[in-house]
Amino acid sequence: MPNLSKVRDLDGDIINGYKSFNSIVISDIDKSLHLLGSKPYSSSDPHYKVIAGAGFDQDEIVLGQISECDRAVKAQFAGLPVRHLLDRGHDDQKLFEHIDDLSSHFVVRLKSSRNSNEFTFNQKGKPQAVKLVDAQLEQGFEEVLNRFVRKNKVYSQARIHLVKGSLTLGEKTYTVIRVHVLNRTQNPVFKEPMMLITNEIVTHFQEGFAIYQAYLRRSKIESVFKFLKTNLGWEDFRVRDFYVIQNLIALCFFVGGYFYENQQEITKDPQAKVICSLAKSKGKVTRHFYLEGLKIIANFLLFQQFIKDKNLTQQDVDQIIKTIS
Image (tube, rainbow, N blue to C red; front, top):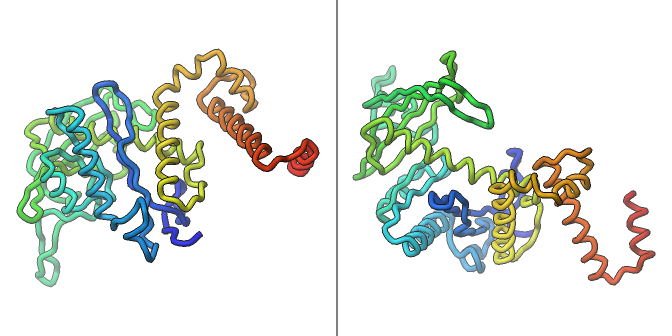
């Protein structure tokens, strides 16, 4: 296919595909996820700026969708404070200033290469910026958590260190927070400390911890997208129309979000055992077997539609089955 970009798949390998920027709202009202926007794009297309569904460069796509979603949420819920959560790929001064201009908040994970405002001098006497991860920040907070959960592993009596500082970029100054989490034997839970930046004011531990907890909500979003890639084949579809891609992403997201939010109830449903048995579950009713069973049903329905579309006879179908069995 022409005009595909180079993208990274779930295993970290570089493959051909379309990049996309997707926005989700996490509601504190009903504790659920809602897809707000999806924008696929291809920076390798020679007519990139005039393709329906793209029409922007990457920065314009990101900033434009942030603006659209920000306005949409505020229009629906007047007076509701909006906080944008973005990963390290959006450690960008232009983005920080853009969200400031929207009068909204943000929490962004910083890259480990981000410099602080501190300087040291090298052996030649030349000034050299100190990385934020190594900088001497202003104020530290520490507290013991009775229960800390990471990747389904529970750490009891974990100790969290929050160190707060500031970072001046251009004419604006932002709050930065460096987070260390240690287990009860004082070994780090994370290999590297997490560096966060926000335009919110932090004066004590609870405010800093709220910023950290807000960023951790991204894992809920990422779990849904991981489900889309591993179970619904999001990385496998190959279509050329940007509007079709947007529709596919929306459909996959809603399916993925439904199972993510309701997996406990689904596994108790009387029909779940039948669906799991299709995946040879040997009587087990688990989320894994349920999803595998649904994939089998989906493939069956697709095959039935294929038979209808191609006007295949029973003899044709028997020959196909013989070929693959």
